[in-house]
Image (cartoon, rainbow, N blue to C red; front, side, top):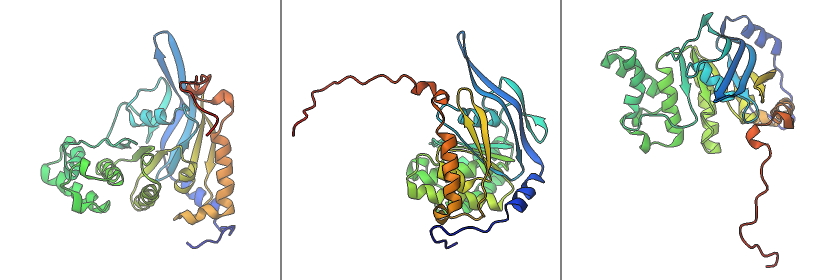
Length: 298
């Protein structure tokens, strides 16, 4: 795609989203509420979320610090129990972790004592696959992510981008219905991050997977998502769900178009919440006392 600055995009938005909404609902939250308790203090992190995600959608979740983005992904993954409401996958309640929901975190969570191949084999082996079957499945996904030359390397021998590709392969080898990604590219440099975004979009467009992607990067959300779920903080509620009216496949050149700039302005407004929605940790920041003498003269 070769776009000039300010060039407009022709895209049949209605047909694209009509097709999405005709697909089955794979994940549904009904009045989903998460309350954290510490001693006698209760804090509502997520409040009465109602959300339907359709099969093979790419959903990005954004919002200010403390809005519950990561909490939502952990609840969907089954890592944390929720307090109230319902959370359904294919109409069945979620109770605990399951291979049908893969998770990729921002931090590198590979087993440091295992090679790339052994890390990817771990899931199938835990599900009861024989060693030859697990090894074959691992090699297939290692080839898909382009790391076949590194299958016998250990995590400390890999770059950050390579480690996240292995983490993605380790999640996808289990053939999950939903892939949850909690700011997976946040620690990468801009060039590697852009390459990983493209690689992820290529994967998503070629396999049967629904992706829920948590990010604080507004450009990333617009480039990746079919829909963006914007949360507000204190408590975390859905402020707005935005359909991204940009054609696929998407390239960084889209960022020069009026359509992208309009979406960016809208998302920026949603994320930068009013003062009463900010993370409580950011409220009442103290004035920093002077700890050294600073000369006003050179």
